[in-house]
Amino acid sequence: MPSKTKRKKRAKGVDYGFATQTARDFIQLYNVDWLPVDVFELVDRYAEATNQNIQIKTIEDLSFETKIDRQSLIDDVIYGEDGLAIFDPDTNTYSIIINEKAEPYGRIRWTVVHELAHIVLGHLSNSKTSIVMWQLTEDEYNDMEQEAHIFAGEILSPKFIIYRIGAHSSAEIQDICGLSIAASDSRENAIFELINDKRKMHDSMLTIIPTFAQFLEFKTICIEKDKMRIKSRITQNTPAEKQLSILKVNITPEGKYERCPYCGNNHNADAANFCKLCGSSLFESQPLTPTTPCGKIGEKDASFCDHCGNIVYKTRFGLLFDKDEL
Image 1 (cartoon, rainbow, N blue to C red):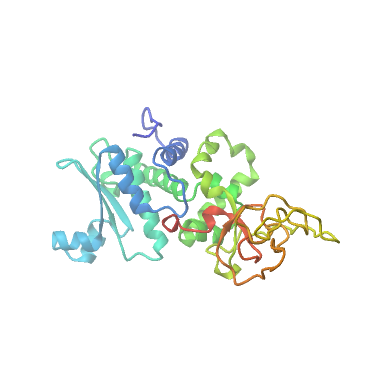
Image 2: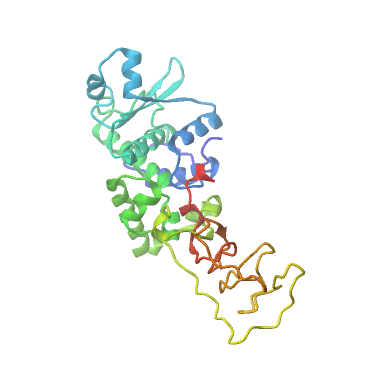
């Protein structure tokens, strides 16, 4: 499944449109649907889908294979950078070399996708075996590096998804996307460009919304606020106002109100112990009392947990868990 976006001929200068649209096509084709992105799994998924041999190697791996000391590899292979993409035409193999000791970890994640970008964007075609200064003119090198940065930014921190969440600060972007401070600052600038000039918002941005549908869905969670994974972008629904007198409602054989007699809500789940809107017990004879937060994920309109009766917090589903926790 190659990218839907084709560049007819490489022109001079940075092709912002090509790099950006290729990233958005990539998001849809290879189901990039959660933040932070698992970059190592992403490379494997792309390689399998396109039937390409792409290996990720650390400097330590390369040192063991070649018997060349670590510092020499950093100086003479990746030229002091965080990584390098290499194509071996004899074996038809791509290698993404990364400095596994780069800090913070967000830099490593960015490097993996940046080097993948050189492969996806076709920078290693035309007999180029790696993107290094001595193989290219300075302009060619800088243009390819910038296009790879554009691609990596849109994969790891899709501009419209971040805008949709409302996470406009560098600190929030860093938390949500797992980027370094420098990369988060750059994405913050990109978000504010979008906010300040809505003409930069176009239909191609909307195409990735369905892919992130589950991530963007609003949910509530019964948890102590300071234990939430992402502590920004959290709200609470206003509790329903209780009636001055208890409403007359039917009671089931189990002694449970068919609807909340305190606020009138008749949209509680069959297994609910408490009204999700006002927090009242749904049992007549033995009213339950709230316990410690139970961790239940609830509907987006809830003010209280219908299982344990505690208050709940509302946020995007994707901000509650890393994807591997689902």
